[in-house]
Length: 233
Image 1 (tube, rainbow, N blue to C red):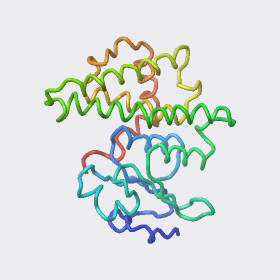
Image 2 (image 1 turned 90 degrees about the vertical axis):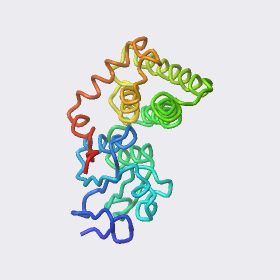
Image 3 (image 1 turned 135 degrees about the vertical axis):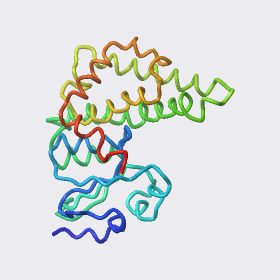
């Protein structure tokens, strides 16, 4: 039986089976990356609902696993050398799980480099820019009189969507084969629905992206994972 007592988070979000990988998350675009990867890889895991409220993500227990107070985070009881390990940051989790299983990160070093660069593109570009776009279109930023912040993020979102649209010409998946890069990217495209921002970024201009989203969400593992853990406890 794995001993996870060294992880204070487990005193609040208590594992039922400590031999399983423990997921601490919420179904945001970043959060579902981890659940989708776990479902695609068919790894046994337990999902713990950690809301975005300060009471959860800024609690001492959660900060003990992720000092950056963001979901998702995981504990793998069977980490390197058979020892438990905690991992935070959604991109790092995808890389860790891919390397652990040897799946969804390519068949050789060249393919892994292609997948990793698109994963980093999402982490450093698409995710942050669409997140800021959502703030200025749907949330508090929409009430700011100065139009320049919103124009900046609308313009950058369009540019990034164009980059991806081009990469998908003649391809079902961004690097050719389905990979961790797609698991990182597609949930953020889907977030444009939540942000009510499709019209403002000219979604209809990007003919490859809708088919890409449809393919992604038609996958059984993605369909299972898109609401893990559930928003309502």
